[in-house]
Length: 337
Image 1 (cartoon, rainbow, N blue to C red):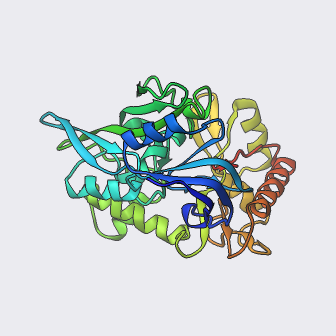
Image 2 (image 1 turned 135 degrees about the horizontal axis):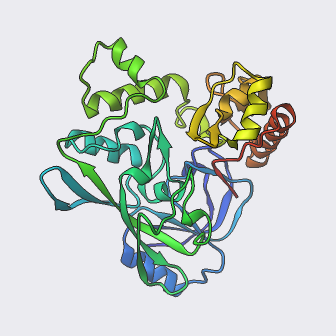
């Protein structure tokens, strides 16, 4: 365990933004984490996981801790349920593939989401009708102020749409060290009605899909729409899909009868942010090395040497244009530093 100085973070964020950390340390165990917290000034502490839900606009002054704690453990099993304790440094997609290989159901719709397990609860990641909260049982954390362990249950986390307690009142106060998931072993509850999953299954003549089939369908869809961060810098979906009330929805539909939407509740409707952005003419547009992906308007990309500030300026321009065009505010899904 070594603290490095003036460390480039280009390889530690999926946008590939070249900013520096004044101090950097990679952590591979809870004991190491507690030791470094006890021995260093944590007033400017920055926790870094997979760097996939992050836009860095400036150098990080202070100590950057890269959580690289690995390991997956079965901690409890019943006839149809398995509880998996997964350490924070495990790659999310590799964890999903581990579940598929062992016929553990519940996370197949979340295939190919970039990032690590430890940051997944913060965002309450979700895709194709499934959210992390649906399979989340608990997580263990270290409270940075006291250096003591604390467990959060599903209820404790106050999960919402791309939201949790860790983005609000507990922000910056706890470091997630592992997550326990409750998954099925036999009676899998497949979710195939959202998005293009069913069409993808039908295309492959699959009428009685397994969790592996659903995972492969999701991977195929995501690869056809979303750029690989290894090939072009991006953070997946940059904006949340806005949720609007009845009155706003009725006014919106009156002006845009062709617009897609999803009913969240009898009084709330979700409008695809990608559709709004595309209607404003941003899809495929490039501004220097910052741009909007040609296949998915929700994804902002770094074509090579864009700075975080340039990407953020583009995001603000998109926000303003959508607001002026549709009277709808689209909120960033990524954390902007």
